[in-house]
Image 1 (tube, helix red, strand yellow):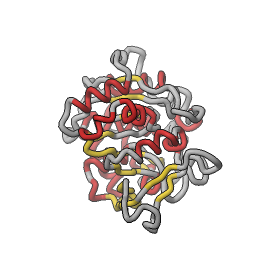
Image 2: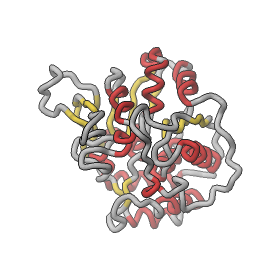
Image 3: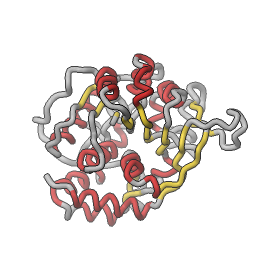
Image 4: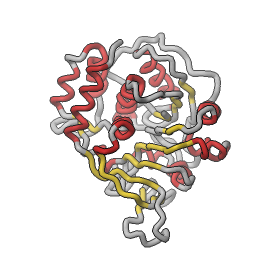
Length: 298
């Protein structure tokens, strides 16, 4: 997982670290929701909270070209307000993220990458170590939208943060599943689900504390847990409706960060480069979320 915790990233990490069907080899951090020193610390806090032995590596501090803009207004200055994780949560490994990703990927016959922040580390990895492509089964990426943005009218935050990296990733030839706003804004974690978390031990208390400090969405309807949808897709792809499309990324101008889907099949001779999630069963998402937290034992 390549991530920028961030509240919904923290929830996604919680799900990935504790599900027996997922063998999480490495967590890499990138600048996004907050600066990379904070996203690295936040990843370490989640790993330490669950007493797991998964390495965390620090990655890119800024996008490839575009100036860095964080989302502290949404996630708070620390990126994970609402719970006291203490100060003793360990250190990242000495390897930088790109090197750590290379080594982890090449050690496996095939692996799935799950980026839930900007894709800067992924783009740098593909540029420096193109040999990893043959070992990557798929990329399941939170980001983008083919129906409208949350940073501008057309751009979603992860893609907007580093559109040049997004373009490199989508042009890589690796199978990509796009888990974007088209589904994450439908799979809201309802107020009832959030309230239920308080009765689910220390994990529920921690997640409730983070989620109730999340300034994304209308709390009367619920909060979007954007990044958690990547884990839900890995485990239950049948709950999602998808379309195979060709995706291009706008890297300049007023539409910078826009994800442009060739929905008419007019420009790429019938080729596609992404499986785009366009619908989801929100009720099942809420049920699954609670079931997962109920199973976590500290």
